[in-house]
Image 1 (cartoon, rainbow, N blue to C red):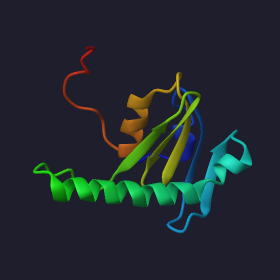
Image 2 (image 1 turned 180 degrees about the horizontal axis):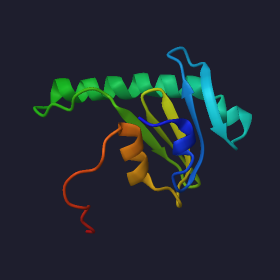
Image 3 (image 1 turned 90 degrees about the vertical axis):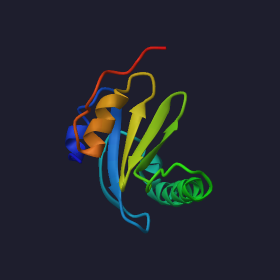
Length: 117
């Protein structure tokens, strides 16, 4: 994964931050109101809930989904993208989610481009 300052260069990103396992803010960059940036505890809780959901899928379905990497909450104005302990706040309609996924996952995209259905 790349640094927070580099994430701020991705189209649509307005803020980014990292949080600890107990919900404490480690680092933050960008211009988001303090109450929103201090939402790290909510991210920790969502990480836990999403991991439990993924474990249930792994246990009930024949396909192996693996372990949780991250999640997205897609709002009409802003979205939150979380991978591990890093969260990125994005203007929903402006965000370059493909670039965010590449940067957050730490590898380049491979294979053909996405199909437009």
